[in-house]
Length: 100
Image (cartoon, rainbow, N blue to C red; front, side, top):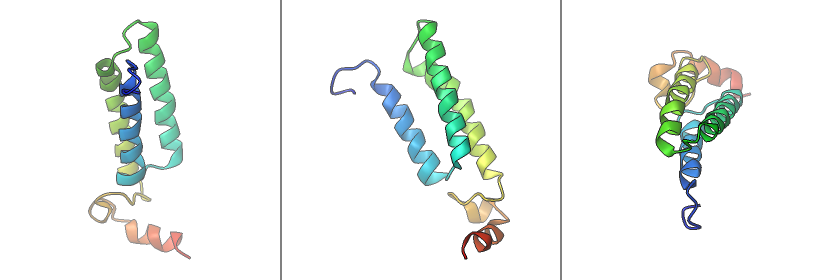
């Protein structure tokens, strides 16, 4: 989007970074990803309606939501993302149930 001189190139960047974090680093489950995406759309639409669709307000509003999603996943007994062996005391039991 930046190459086509769109002023909204930062939207793609925010979504891409969160996709990487949610899918590859913290391994967020799909329902939480979808909830984050829905709240992101509401966030962007709200700033658009208020006439302030800029990267900083959107990011600062979305950041607490992202932190809550990641924290909820880390506290889950099925957490198997980064540092799972340290943070998830039930990791071995989860993996044994998951692998036939």
